[in-house]
Image (cartoon, rainbow, N blue to C red; front, side, top):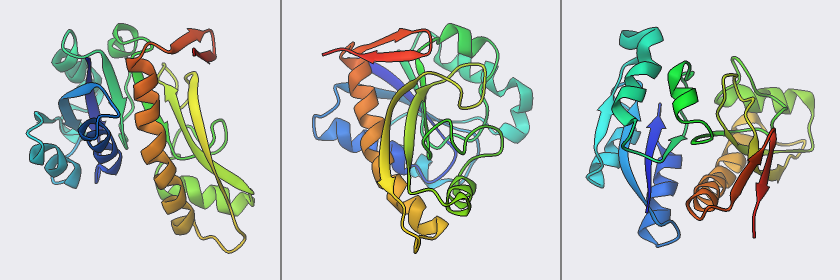
Length: 203
C-alpha cells in the first residue's frame, strides 16, 4: 500500500478527492500525514474528521526552513508527497531525497500560466485575459523550479467567451478532483516511468 503525505494551504477540496478515492476503493493508499503551512484552514478539519495525523508548520514562522522541517517530518515515513493546493515553494534537500516522489497539481495547462506568482484565481484571470479556448489542470513531478517538473497528466476544459475567472476556476477544479487521484493511482500501480522530461504511462 502506497503511503502518502498531503500538503495543503487552504480548503482542501483536492485532499477530499483523495480521501473519497481511498474510501470508495479507487486508491489503494493510506494518508499518513496532512501538513498545512498555515493555521485555521478547512483542509485541516477534513483531515481530522478522518483521524489523519495533521501538522501545522506555519510558513511565516519557519520561512526558509519550512522545506527542511517537512523533510525531517516525512523522510522514511511516506512513499509519495502530494501537493494539493500547497502555496509554499519546496526547496533544498527534500527535492533530492524525494526525487520523482513529489507531485503537484496546477490549475492550468503547463507551460501556460504557471511559474512564480501564478496560483489560485490569478491563473484563471490570465487565461481569460489571454482569450484561450481551452484550459485545464496539470499534475506534474516537483523539481527545483516552479511548475517546471515532468508532466504526468493533463485534463482540459473548454472556455467560453462568457466565462469569468471564477467560472473557469470551478470548471478546472472539477477536473483537478479527477486528475490528482488518477495520477496517484498510476504511481501506486508502478505505471509511471520517467525519462528526462517525459513521463511514460505503462499499460
